[in-house]
Image (cartoon, rainbow, N blue to C red; front, side, top):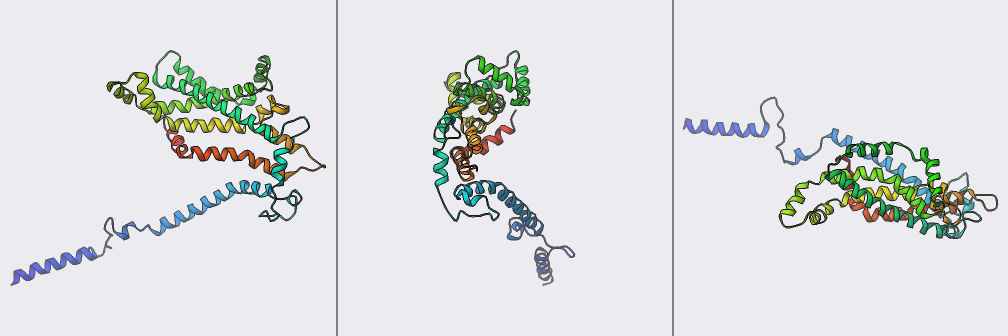
Length: 323
């Protein structure tokens, strides 16, 4: 009887210890329980502060875009006012009609002609940059040849030199080639400016794909070229997208070189917008039409980002950790 009592007492004592823990120590929640998964007050406060800071940064970043769109739908007579209009109460689409049809200045192009010129140059730069940079990055990542390290260092040095420092030299070269005020001449300048960074980035992607994959495909019966195009090339899609975005933005938004080399009816969108803003009708700048033109220039960039955004983040991060 005493044995049964002692055993029962021990079981009872063990059960109590499991519930309340040792004397003087708070019982920690078991791993996986609801209390263990619940974040502490410090973590909740930190997360709240970070979310508020992120919201503030987002609002500050998106407000100029919203204000541009708001002004594009506001009549020009209501834009310059001591009392800002936060919403386009007097909604009008006439600013877009004016920006689309009106010449930037006498003897210069309008938006409807500057848009295809910019699209043609940007598309050509995008294709040429990805083609040349892809071939160069494969050579740097897959082959060992004399002068390879010197070439890589030269790429880094070229990126450090601002384009404006070579502006007059580039101008003289394009003029000697009789390519002034042509899409081909401006496309060559853009491609030469974008290729160094693109080669350096794509090299990291190619180097990040193990060569063992190609060797395995060759064991299965593929030739070296088939192994590269069927195995390695699909894995480089994020890198091509990331570098393609950079080339697209550079060619689409570039202003200085376009202003220097293009004139008249061959203006691209950025010089067109500058001339459109500088010209005045009736002694005042039509800010509503200027904002409408800026919005129309931004629309193709947004469309391009929506198309490639699925691979954009992964491509940028992957290229940042390879070298």
